[in-house]
Image (cartoon, rainbow, N blue to C red; front, side, top):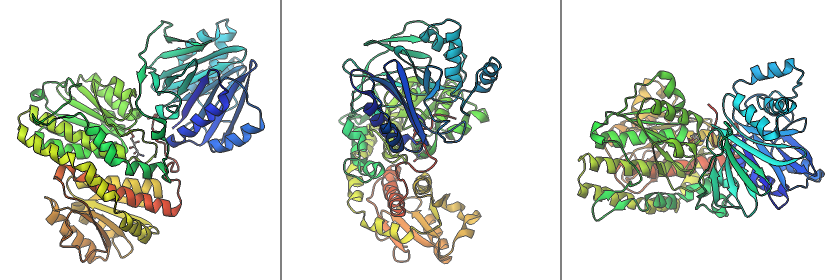
Length: 606
Ligand code: M6R
């Protein structure tokens, strides 16, 4: 979704801003723009298309100045076009904005009646117009912004400049915005990876915060006009972590990073001699009073929740309900104050998941987020947080976030099962030894990818794919199908294998590749039956199993063997070849793997 960057300091702003915009490209966007404050004037360049196109246009102009703001836009109000691209300049005020101003029609109508002319279709344009209207009433620049922000309903992260005033103002409400602290210089960005090569010291702005950068100082205040203080956080990510490191795409790099990502997520969690999993940072409610656990998320993170449900219900014997975050609050869920609501999100900024957390808080439930991004809204605002330590995930298709989320669910399940007396320390110790082997097992899959490339070549021209699995493998096939459709644009459907004969079996013919997960576990016999059904209709089976002697091995078109592990951890191993097949197909088709069409990395609007 939209991205904001800003700079005020001792260096030329132009290349710093373009460089940071490039790093925000992964979030998804359709137009880009930049504004540089130079000699009391502000020069704006913007266009539809990529940051590289903007660079070509902007380089015709000499953009020199040590303060500026820039933006990548993901269209919500108004088509992708130059006139709708940010920055929006009205009079001498220039604004970039992320989020949605819900009352923009009312404001626009009111300002129109007093003579304001609008030149875009965006909701954003009302912001500079409102600021101008407050300036005309005699307010100073900062006060005019503050009064404007108080009128806005909806969500915003904004960066604002004015000609003849060497001040940069930033503010946020329900859209992310962070400040990077350099040596006598300040950065603004929508997320950490955009500026991690410049600094690792950040202030994470909170809702209704404003930051005023004047001379070499920052004044932090809220929209009530009160001075506030915010902590400076040090993030241990490095610039190199947000680079491709020799891989063709971020997605491929991130798939190959999974052994390290899972290892780091496990680090420091075990008291092995005692047979305990440690979540010292959490103050969970009294578990014996917990009547229900909710797991709520979007997309890939939702699939992790479905896997979490299998683990928790089987081992804790507490009912678990999973929900797609965008549906959750609209069905008026019956949440009790003795429930635990687990919100899962790589970015920690997904608007629907944040709204679900708020719903949980209103009901008095304990909210616990599983997040990858330090300082993100879900990490800050939930009652408890567990971080996945996947490192920055740049590819729009989520990969290492998913496997680390499953690892966290597994650890949390062990911790809770032990506390509830459902698993003794010896059992926990046994389970710990299984998950400790997982990074090495992922590595062994990653060392044998040539057959997956071959499978990709064989089926890359297929129009449709079917993915089937049972039990804990059903969410894994959903994840495999999501990976394929989002980056290759091939239609892929996932079904619980037992559901096939209730409809989708009608699709099967000799042209349909059917990916099946069938390890030798409690789902084995039934899934063999489902493979028979596919073969009887001449479907092309791609089998993923931990058993090279699988009874269907000789009859299927393709078989890929994964290492053995316990049932709960199979999804981590099974999903890796599915991620790779999706990647190889998309790469062969030449799609934009890291920034697939129409998609955004961080979905910050509902
Ligand atoms: O940052 P989040 O985990 O909250 O994001 C949720 C989804 O938007 C995300 O998983 C999306 O489905 C990915 N593109 C999947 O690859």
